[in-house]
Every structure is written in structure tokens, then in C-alpha cells.
Image 1: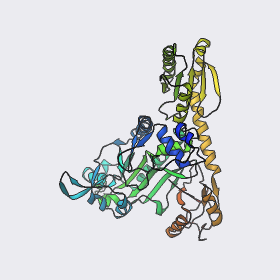
Image 2: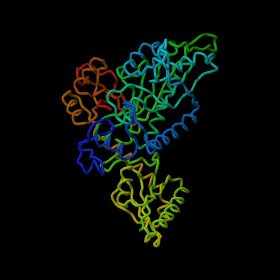
Image 3: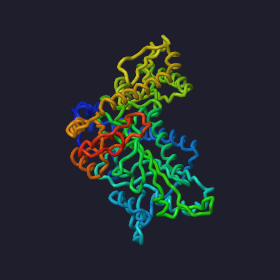
Length: 496
């Protein structure tokens, strides 16, 4: 069984030794990669996953990069309880309506029935707002720039490892400001930080834009997202940043005295990237052999495979460790595969499946000649290089793999994004597995009709300075023919 409970449809050999080709069944390919690359496994808790050490190491690298950036921009981390009083969730009407179907509740402690149930944290605006009300007094206290790392719990009927699970992992930022311009500036700064992280670290091209009203976070005034295209043409919302206005501060009395000694409610924001970004890495960069890890975030950037016979294997392992030490001195994350009794072919395939960016093979003859055999995960050919050259050029090699991945993913997104003006072309484009860019009237009922008809949703309205698809324009709604509402084309696509 795969991670979502379905049976794989690929050939038996692929099921045993490799993975189902993407073109045969992308869903099975994904599920098999997650398991066979040792990223995650099923758990005895329905809808939840167990993240294995390789997947955990990847998440730790993600956390480390983002956490450093948050702190550098003046944000402070804190830790809130997992349990939230039910009454808090009920205070903001849009919020409870948006989250009610997804809530896990705790009604008993031991044998004692609670007078008020707790909710397992679906997000923390409410409890943080409650605490802010006691911490905030004056304009001198602002801005509050807070975030936390933790688990989130949302009931999911159809689960998929990293993408949709009943418990997942994230950071959630929460900030409070004296006025709207400052709060909106925070929202945009975080969105741009997410964009930088995806492009420069994960090699993921993403589109920055604002969500339509129907797709906003529950209780937000405005929601902004970064949207990525997976290799099956579906969209993945990879991060969000929300301007909440004064909605939550009014619900929780988060107010302060201004310089003029007047009481004013704070303007608040929230923002997050979750462990679903690992799903984006898998589905944007993977191929029929398995994962391709972006080098700058990969837990293992280079794997050294000592190639020797039984009588000299230990010697080659020792030489492999020396080579690894030379690479680590260059700042490279390296692992030496010391497994004995396993064929070299198996090791090569195993590390290909796990997506390690570079493999180095080191045998007795290589040692005598002062060379090593190098193979990039994204290439077919092996290179025989002088050992010193392989070591000194490794950082540049990893950077070139990053650029290759980013270019490949960008080209794929651009090739599979169509500009359409007729509804027939819209439906054909969606059915063929593309994103479509079209004018839309902005009416929620029209948006819902498109979703019901095609299973496509608005992804976002690209920002004026977005890297992709930002050009202005006017036209008629692709479905109903009414004037467009956004001054540019909206991105539609099927989503995860």
C-alpha cells in the first residue's frame, strides 16, 4: 500500500526496485518516492505520517534557513500551547466558519468531561491575540514581531504525505502593528522572503500574487501566496502571508494607546510555510529515477562510494573518509556509504532514488591514478577528474545543478501556462494539465461555477512586480463575459 492507502499501478519490477514512471501514474510515483527514499512512512494514527531521519534532516535544513532570516529581520520566537479553548475559535465569525469542519476537539481529561472543550491548534491567531491583549499597552510596545515552530492539526479525509495530513509541521508568524501601511509592509516583506527562499535555495519558481476573496484565509482582509507548478501541471500553494486588518484585534481587545493618548486597535498579520514545501521539492524536481534534491537544501550534497573487494574494502572506506574530510573543508555536506555486503549497483540506484546531487566513486585504481569518478544526479554521464579538481570545484558544481533545476522548472511552468480568452480554450487547457491565465469578473458565484465545471480554482492574481505573469490588461471574463475585475489575467489551475 502507498502512503495514501492506494495500491500502486506501476509494473512489478518498478514496485520492487524503482518507482512507477511519472507518465504512468504520477500519484503512485509520488507515494513510492516518499516511502522508498526514506522520507516518511505511514503511522498508526489515521491521517498522520512518521517523518523518517532523511526527511527530518531536510526539514531541519528548511527550518534553519528560515529561522535565521526571521531572527535577522527582528522577529522573536515563542511557544504556545497545542490546545486552544473552543470559545477562542468562536470569537471571530469568519475564522470559525473557515475552520469548523477541520477541528480536532478534546472533550475529556482522564474520566473528567471538560466544561469547555479544547481545540487542537489549527492555527494560533486566536490564542496569540488573547495573550497580546495583556502584553500590549502603548504604541511604544509595537510592533510585535512573533513566530513559532510547531505542529498543526486539521482533519483531512484524503491524506497524502507532506501535502495533506491530519498533523503537519510549520512555522506561523504573527505580528501586530500600529497602522495598516506598516502591517501591509510586513506581509509583503515575508512574501518576498518566501519567494527568495524558493528561488535561491529550493530552485522552485513561484508566482507571487493576491488570492481572490473566495480563496482568502478565514478572517483575513487580504491573502497573498506563492504558487508553484508541479510536474503534473497541478498547482501547490507553497506559502501564504495574510493582512488581517483589525478583525482579530477587535475580537480579542488587542489595543494600545497612541501618541495622542487615544485607544486604537492593532493591525495584525499572519504568515506560514509548512512541511508541504517538501512535497513541492519532490514534485517539482523528481524524475522517473526518484528524487532530485536541490543542492542548497539537500541533507547530503555528495555521497562517496568506496569501490573495493573484500580484501581492500576497509582501506577504500578509509580513503573515502579522507576524501569526505576534504569536501567538508569546502563546506559540503558529505556521506560515505560504508555498507558492506551490498553491491555497488544497488548503492548507485539507492542514492539516485534519494536524489543526492553528486555521487563520487573511489576505487583502488582511481586512488593510484589520483582521480575520482563523479556523476551528477541530473546527468547521465560520469566524469573522471583529478581528485584535487573534483574537490575544489564541488561548490561550483552544486551551484550549477541548482541553476539547472531552476531553469528546468521555470521552463516547464512557462510551457504549461496558457493565455486564453474563450471558455472552450480554458476548459481544454485545464483538462490537458496546464495552468491558464484568463480575465475574470471577480464574482464568487462565477468563480465557483468554474470550479464545479473544471475542478480548477483561482491560484492568485500576480502582483505588479511579480517575476512571472505580472503584465496589466483588461478584458472580458472568460466564463460570463462581464468586465474583468483585477486589471490583469488571473491564474487558474487544479491544485493539491
